[in-house]
Structures are given as structure tokens and as C-alpha cells.
Length: 350
Image (cartoon, one colour):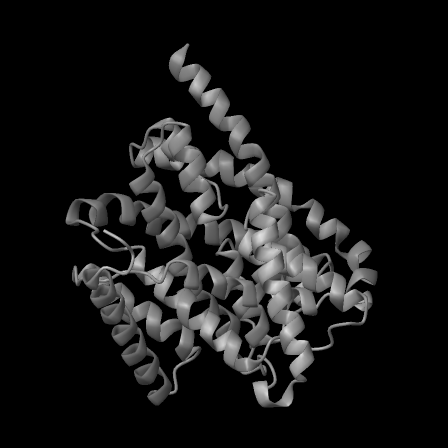
């Protein structure tokens, strides 16, 4: 069936309707981040109810380019000047990853009975798609990996705003951007070109997370050159939140009771482990004076890169600090993943 088959259109219409109702309800109830949490909650409910739903494919991927441009536009000469100050806290990321591996792999192996490849790639807090691909190549269970990582992102994205507001006293009301009508047309055109060129160019070069990192790199160059002076308009960032929220909920399509009670339950329990490790490192970095509490919390929170970027924007946290730490984490996990995959494949065949 082609993507434009009537059943696909109907399923996407159902997804859009649920997400729209969720957004409207969250907005009406004055709940935080209605454009993110409304679609996420209602698409999750629809997925668990086994309604005929479907994601938005390339449109959802394109939405992530908006966040890449937003981060890139925030990289100014002032931010670059602060990089040496971040060096010590960034140096703790490899230690953070090593502890996650030491704790996480036995957690999935011994407590939940996962096989070795699935346990390793379920434990590693990399990008969802990357961990599923590498884990499958290593002989892991792709469905289990997808559900564990989707559960990790869902719970962290849900709980992080609570911690930010109630523990750190952060307001989730920072202006996310100027309205589109206030931005120069030529800068909007340049940002759109940077998003497309960065995304497709990065994908062609094999850049991991190309939809975010490609636009981020291109826009950062433009920002440092004095060509870009604004972030994407508020409407574009709200659209990105909407599609990201839909995507998180959609990941649970077709989940069975057996998967809920074993795989999803394992993911929920593991989030507690990750949260404890992240809280420890946040406290350490803050106590050493290497970072302020809110950006440090977001930098070590093992959620999705796109989702943590959204939270950094709405709290007004230092985007450069947050994204530098997440990039370091993802690079370490991604670079190490193929090595581990080969070792596991060799052990399996040898």
C-alpha cells in the first residue's frame, strides 16, 4: 500500500483529531506545554486503545529541523566563549555513561531476563532509532528496544516539568520565540533553507540525528557569521512540539498486555534507576559550581534530545550548555554502539 492509501489517510486523520483535542483540552485547563503534552497524552491513550492511528512520517522528522535551527541560532560568539567553562562538567559525561552501562545492563539481564544485546541497547540512553537499529543488528529484540526507549522518553518528558517547577522553581513560561509576523522575511527564508540543507545534507553524509544536528550546524555557522539574529518563530516551535508529542504517543501502537507487563514495566522501572543516576550527577555538578541547577538538570536528564531542547527553550535555560552535554552523551553512545554490536555478533557466531 502506498502512503496515500485511504486507510493511511484515515489513520492519520484519527491521529490529528486526537492530538488536536488533547491540545485544546490541555490549553483550556491551563496545563503546562499543551502543544507537547496534549498530543502526547491523547495519542498515547489512542495507541493503548488500539485505535487505527498512524504517524506523520517525514513531516514529523522535518519538525525536528525547527529545533535544530533554534539551537543553532542560539550559538553565538558569547556561547563559544563559555565552552572552556563547560569542559569539566562535559568530562563527567563518559563517567555517567559508564555507570549507566554497569548498572543498566545487569538490571535488564538479571531482573527482567532480557538477552545480552537487548539488555545493552535498552540500557544505553542514545537516540531511540539509533539504539533500535544497532540493537537489531547485534541480535537484539527491536520491539522490546523500541518500547523501552519510548517509555524512557515518555516518562522523563512527563516528569521533568514537575521537577523543574517544584524542585528547582523554574517557570515554564519563557517566550519560545517571536511571532512570525515580527520576524524579517529574509531571515525566515534563510532559516528554512538552513533547515532543509542541514537535514538533507547531514543525512547524505550519514550524520546521526541529521534532522536536528544538520540544521543546528548550518544555522550555528550563520549565527556566528552575523547572518541570523533570531530563533524560529513561536508558531514553528509550537508545531514542532505538537508533532513530537504525537510521535511519543504513537510509539505505543499495537502494544500487547504481555509487553505492558514485561517490557514497558521494565522501561518504567529503569527510568527510576536513570533518574537516580542523573540526580546524583546534577547534584555533583551543581555543588562543584560547574553549572546552574536548571540547565544541569536538563543536561543530564536522559530524555530525547529534541524533547530536552523544548524544555530548555520554555525554561529559558542555557541552550548551549544543555545541547553540548546531550551531544557528548549521544556521540559516546553512538560511537560505542557499533563496536559493541560487532563484539556481540562475534561472540554469538564464535
